[in-house]
Every structure is written in C-alpha cells, then in structure tokens.
Length: 462
Image (cartoon, rainbow, N blue to C red):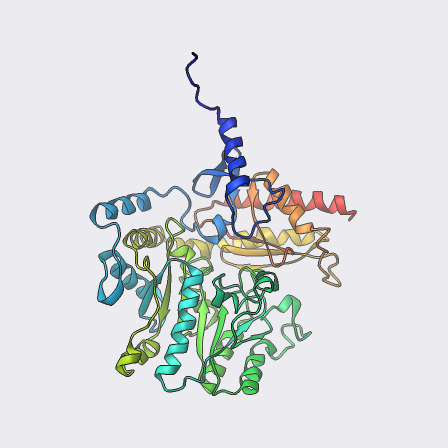
C-alpha cells in the first residue's frame, strides 16, 4: 500500500478556499460567487496569500496593523504574559498587572484630563461603552431626561445594536430597522459634498451649527451627547474644517452636552499626532479607541473618560456609583500585554512623528491621481487618505452600482499587488498603510493606482 503523501501547496490552497466558501461566514461579505483571498503571512507593510502572491498592504488590515506585520516584540510579550497569567477577570475590583499598566500608558497619551480608561475588546464595544457612560452620567447628575444623542451622516462607529443606531451609512443599518430610539442625525462636515450647498471659505460652518439647531428643536433638557469620529473614516476619510470641532465644543458647553470623539481609526498616531483631537482642536469628554492600540495583534479597545465624567460616578448615590457594563474578557492580560508592547514600539521608533513626516509624501503622491477624469477628490491627513470616484468632475455625480468604477479599480490594483479598501458606499478608496511603510512602497501604491484607474477609464470610454 503506497505511503500517504502530503498535499501540495496548491492543493492545500484550493482546499482552504473551498472550506472558506463552505463554512466560513465573514463579515460584510456577499459569499455567493466570492473569490477567496486567503492571507497566509505578513512582514512590515507586505502580506502574502496561500498562492505566494505578494501585496503591499496599503490598508494595514482595516487600518489596524500600525506597527507593521511580524513584530516579534509583541509575540514575545504575549508569550511571556501567558506564562505568568493567561486570563483573569476585572469585575468587583479585580485587575491584573498589564491591564493596569496599559490604562496608565493610555491615560499618559490622551490629551487633557482624559485620565480614566475602561478596557474593551474592540472599537464597537468602546463606542457602546461611551454611549452608556454618557447616559449614566446624566442620570447620576439628576438629569436622566438628557438621554438623546446627536450623530452625523457618513458616520461609522461599529456594528453592535446600540452602535448601529448611530450609523450614518444606510447600507449598514437599513436591514436591522427599527433601531434604538433617542438618536438624532445631522449632516456631516463633508466639504466636497456639502449638505447645505456651500463652499468652504464662504460658508458659516453650517455643519456644526446644525447641531445647535437640533438641540434647540428637541430641547437641551433632552439632548445629552454629541458623538462623531474626529475625522470621518469608513464614510469616506473626511477631515472636518478646522473650525468645526471648536465650534461643536462651544455649542456643547452652551447647552450642557458631553462630546464623544471616536478615535478608533485615528488614535495612536495615524493622523500625525497621538490623537486627531489634538490636530482638530476638539476637547472631548469621552474618547473611544481600538485598532492602533494593539495594531490588531490581539483584540483590544478602550474608552477614555475625563475627570468630570468619572467624578460623576464617584459622587453619585451608592446605587448609581457602579457602571453596570463590561464583559468577561475586558482587560484580558494577554490583550493588554500586546497593547503595551505595541505602544512601546510606537514610542521607541517614534512612529507618530513618522506619520507626520511621511504623511505629506503620501498625500502629495495620491493627489497626482486628480489628473484622471474619474477622480473627483483626494483628501486625507498623515497616513490616511481617500480617493473619490465620479462620473464628472463638474457634476460630482457618482457612478451607478452596475458600473462599479471604484470596485473595478480595486480589482485591478489587487492584480498588480496592492491592497486598498473600498468604502463610502462603493465610491471611495481608502489608503491607510502601516506606519513602517517605505517611500518606495508608497510610490508602488501610487503607480499601481494610476495604472489601475487608467485601465478602468479606458473600459468606460473616457
């Protein structure tokens, strides 16, 4: 009887792809007819699939792997912690060394008096936590009627049921309606497509003033919170005008609202500062973070609270002091160890400054793509940017879903070994590479996108 043979690499790859089609149900994926891309390994800003194809990871695995793939220091920190204490809860006053040290390190990096850190396992949980903290804050203050929360069009904050209720992208919420009450949508600070028909420079920052109008409509006694990504991410990478967040803070102070800044994408350096609030002049009461907190090596998120918010729990009646929220794995020792090792790399290699220094090079390179007739806008900051595709620069009209220009460009770029991300309802590409990407790799991304856009334009008859 012949000896069994090991499957060939090609056979193993085919088996994995078939098993994915048969058994794995990935998020945000239409599985019928999907062509699997099974990533096997990564190093720095590059990943390889099971067929040996090499790609520049120009999206850092969902704007996450900020310190790059294959960082031995993080593997070693996780392994060392697992030998000492692999798991222990944080309920009723218990904690563990890495979770305490991580909270202290995050508080050190957060601006202002955001000194109190609640650890979670991801960004959606961090946002859900912030919303719950805000509601209990007002109850603790004797103002429980201030349960309503203002959010923005184009926003993305996660996919838990509560957070889906503040989705500003209809495609992510319409299948789950009715959602939770008490959430009010306003227009986004989206200068390329101003909801008020204005041009920046001759406007009155109506995008911020609309928040005041909604507060007055529903009553300041009922509206307690304003939430927004400091710079809109999944909705299209949309930096706000510089006046926006200071004006929002002024409105919040006038009518007694808490401000939550979602820094899940921009936190820990991507915009060129530890947090984008420092760049855009926001002074939030609560900040949410994830992704770059551990560079995705293990699931990790956090909510940072100001002294004002935290003290409202300390001074509350006994039955209101506890924040009745949490989960088994919050503050997990291994996840916290990964986060600490990740932040140490960012500090040691000065990667925040690298984003600030390298960001303009990437932004300038991508702006050369504006020479293409179907590229309507290129925008961003630091090492995060987007390309918006239009039928006409004059009308700024998007392509229909059947044309799928952005999806075609994505496919062409993938053939040429570059991963970008399709966002903004299918009309935008986002680029958010690891902080360790080289100038040569950025040049490759720009060149491949240039070629890919050209191919698609030819197909569409431009």
